[in-house]
Image 1 (cartoon, helix red, strand yellow):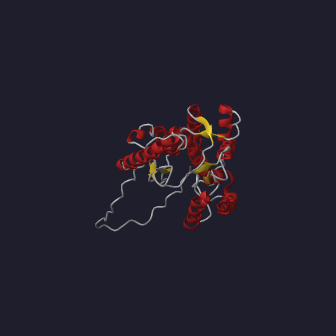
Image 2: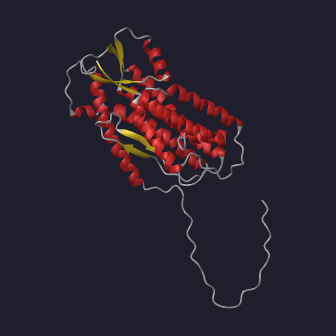
Image 3: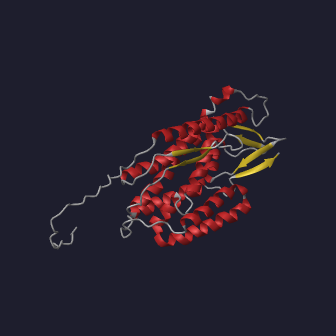
Length: 321
């Protein structure tokens, strides 16, 4: 790289020299470890409490077997909590590891707890904060796609392990239940383990299966081609200026989806808020001119396949039997 030559200017008259303090360089990847630990501990507690409720529902076969709630259920509640935290943690550490690889300043994962009741997940997920612009489209793509792929690699085996402990039981009657949408991956896994379910029978999911289902939902939502979601990063890295109309179309589609299922309401509100606060365009990378290697487009297709098999148009439906 060539630097412009410096032309000497007139000499300064003798006299006192004024010095200015130089700000120390900002150290990267510094975190308040205590905050991450506290949030993780609280999220572990809330998800274990939710896991205890899921395990109670599982062993009681949707209330068919009379089984009182007791503190001892917190131990098997770890089936759910450790599974979901592993999936979410792998997702965010995928982002973080690639931030370290490209020297993009970022935080460790923040786990976001939710009260065990009335929320049936115990967590809102996990996030990392990226503190500086992405240097290139390649870095943006790799950091964006690493999270969903890492989470997917963890959720697939936990799904199948959980199915080995699940049971086929009669459809519950005489109560309120939540029907979960079935992504293609979920349907394929259940069919491979149990075949076609007989009429009047349903799958009584082990808590590990529910954690994997929630992992699929989180993966699909993150891969939506919008704004600064993972899918938005991938779309901008591959399509650049065409990502803006696709992002706006995603917001419009999500709003329409709220008429199909109210479970889309939170995502629609979040997208609209992000749209007004951050604008419709993805921030430019520093070296915009650098082309994206062709093999990244192959990985983008893999990410699209993961989105398709993890997506469900109606995630949750209340049902009275």
